[in-house]
Length: 290
Image (cartoon, rainbow, N blue to C red; front, top):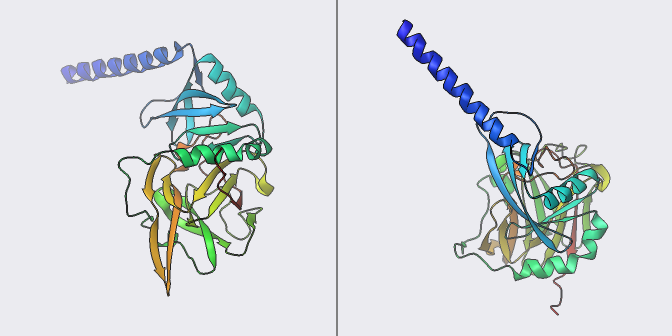
């Protein structure tokens, strides 16, 4: 028994020593922002390349669940991130290749919408694209083209699981707006995954806001009816067709299986999981290339 207790004691000492080494090495990072002390089991490392005011920056995040526990970046990049975290209403546009572009506000983003579209349309398809398109296994996320040119599906579990609520974009509508997801959709601060579709030839700007009435921080994506995009992986697939009655419909979509992997800029310690409160969708056009 004494021998067993001796080995148990050695194991505990080794564990404590190892934990101290992890904390010490973390604190010695000269360009590190630590949001809270925690263990490193179940920690996910997320590398991000982003654009801000025409310049490219890189940061590495460490996440547990939907909390950011550590950020590693150079001093200039940390200053930019701190600036974005200090203002309300900052925007994040997510390109098809996974690169993000940050804006101080929605007006700033809209002024750059043509540039965003040109960069988005210029992204090359990846070698491992699927020619078959993609629809989540959850049948509640299957697009409905009966009188609609687009649709958005909000899911309260990752991987498009759990409760699903849909918002349709009617064919004759100029735009679609939901000022608050709670009264009708019962999805206020409950969205963990989402997918959205558009018919081929249609481009829809999708804005998802943190607060009601389109306030607070927001994330944006252009739904391109010609291809599929996976927001967390930057993977493309070609658009696909479906038969409805006598019509053959070609369409594409965007897919975000887990909002816990998209950092919320206003709150440096959180992600977009369970944050979306209001939604806007508006048809836009493909710009004429210079």
